[in-house]
Length: 167
Image 1: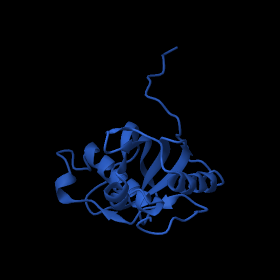
Image 2 (image 1 turned 90 degrees about the vertical axis):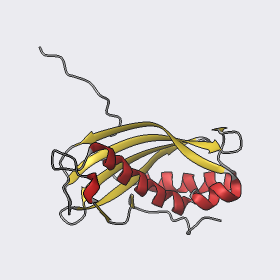
Image 3 (image 1 turned 180 degrees about the horizontal axis):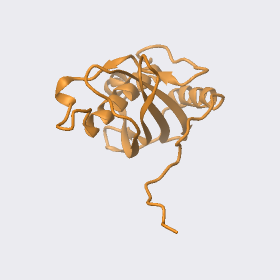
């Protein structure tokens, strides 16, 4: 059973509002790049709870997810005291993979600070190998993918790192 009921949102998943911790601020006076990933990860953990693939799933069914790929874009600085919230789109899924896109925004002013696009793999924790999701979990995932497909896609999905040639 999921930690909380799986829902079929008509909008992307929204994390709880998070606060920037003082030790996350670097010598440039802004949020260090590593902690953007901490906030993205915390948001994903919250969404995974709704899907029923959080810590209880790992303990009871010996399954978890590992991140296989991640692409972060840093668009605007975050500073100490800025409240933030992450929106998560579950773009695609198959028997073993989840493709997500996240936006980190200032929680009260709404401006976009960073995005993260990820590929997560379902892991059998007994063998520590990629494995198919159980059918009940796959159904929940498919319902969210279908719901999120009706929501406008954010800009930046599928971007890669490149330097445009000078011509």
